[in-house]
Image 1 (cartoon, rainbow, N blue to C red):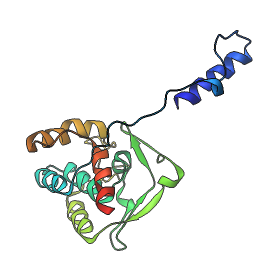
Image 2 (cartoon, helix red, strand yellow):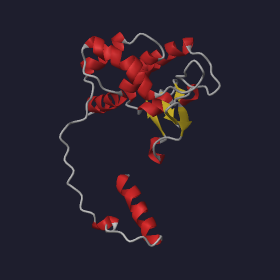
Image 3 (tube, one colour):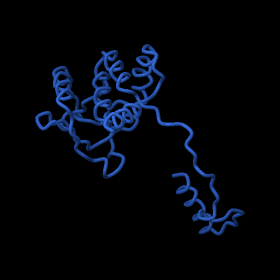
Length: 184
């Protein structure tokens, strides 16, 4: 993304006839990328403890969906009740939420239908019994009917649970990595 932006700047500068001390994007010499840390993920034991400690809705259910499906945080915040097909045991990802606003998912391949286990279907059925309708039919809506902002959910709800369980702080992505690690 940064190189794409820099390339656009260099092309525009050249088109406007500015003299540049720099060269083209292709001539830039970049340092080699080295990954020194592994992405944080929740282990099965940590997920079990987090789900046991999360009692407040809709956050408990958000963490369940994150832990079992590995969906991105924005995809979870953008889920609608119409995304659920509990008879077929699937969740359709058709929209995402970013800082409280609905948008299309991250990429074309992010629009998908994923299978879910019976246990998650049972949890979702129980959650739907107390679900409050909202204009956008969001599965997880704020009091004003807007999508949750994932970073606020992490800061206000997930981190206090992690702190109480003495689990190192992480965000929704740790659920995503945990789900994929458990599947492997």
